[in-house]
Each structure stands twice: as C-alpha cells, then as structure tokens.
Amino acid sequence: MRTRSDLADRVKEALSARTVGERYGLTANHAGYAHCPFHGEKTPSMKLYDAPGKGFHCFGCGAGGSVIDLVMRIANLPFRMAVMRLATDFGIVGGMVSARPAPNTRKRREGEYTALCKELWELDALVAALAPATPHDEWTDAWCAAMDRQVIVEAEIMGMEAEGFGRPRTA
Ligand SMILES: [Zn+2]
Image (cartoon, rainbow, N blue to C red):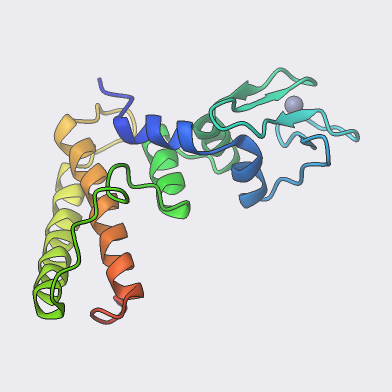
C-alpha cells in the first residue's frame, strides 16, 4: 500500500507548522505556541515550529508530527487528502515552478492552455473512476499518480489564467 509520495515530501520540506497552523485557524503567540486543538487547555502548549520540516508538538497532550499530520487531525482528512489540501492551498507543485518553459508566442500558449484544460477534465474523470470504493480500500499507484498530476495541471492552469488565458472555470 502506498502511503507516501514525492508530493508529500515536498509539502513537508516546504512548509512550517506555524504557517500551516495559522492558515487553518490556530493562533500562535510570539514564541510559536498555540492553544492545542486536541486537548482542552487555557495556556498554549502546542509548539508550532517556524522551521519548515520540523512539524508541531504539544507539550500538554503529546500530540505531534508533520504539517501533514497537523492538517489530517485539524481537518479530519485522510493522508492523501491532507497532502492535496496543503499542496493546493500553498501552491506547491514540485519541479514545475523552476521548470517553466521559455516564453512562447501567445498563440502557442493558448494551445497549451486548451490542452491542459482537456487533460484536467480527463484527470477528473480518471481520479473519480480509480478512487477506492471505501476509505478502507487500498490506494492504487494509478490513483495516486493521477491525483499528483491533477494538482500540477490545476496549478498550471491557474497560473495561466492569472496571466489572462482562458476564462475562470465554473463548477
Ligand atoms: Zn495537546
């Protein structure tokens, strides 16, 4: 069973628990301590580390882990969904930022935009078709790969829309 991915590693390396915690509703004091959402307390005892990759640790109840663990528990999401949420919310698409192609003509890039939209549409269908029937079923590599690609394609499309290509997609 595949429970890790390159994307998960990139998310963990790129984000600090403080950035992530504050994005999802925790408030850290100047020392980086927040009220722990996992046990009742009056004094903040959950350390949200500033350094990316260090994660969080609650000195009250012992809860701790990576930024992915944090989002899994705060938002009650399975591992893959927590990774997807972080990658989407923080725009993490490994390799794609530095590997941008050289500027092309506008017309050629419009063609790329159309192709990306078509690929995303196909990926949406693929992800739905490959999804485990129940939360207890195994995740197939094909499903994980399709979701990784989905995040990348979606980010590419959003980037191009920010440059003025296409129209915002409607639900
Ligand atoms: Zn705690």
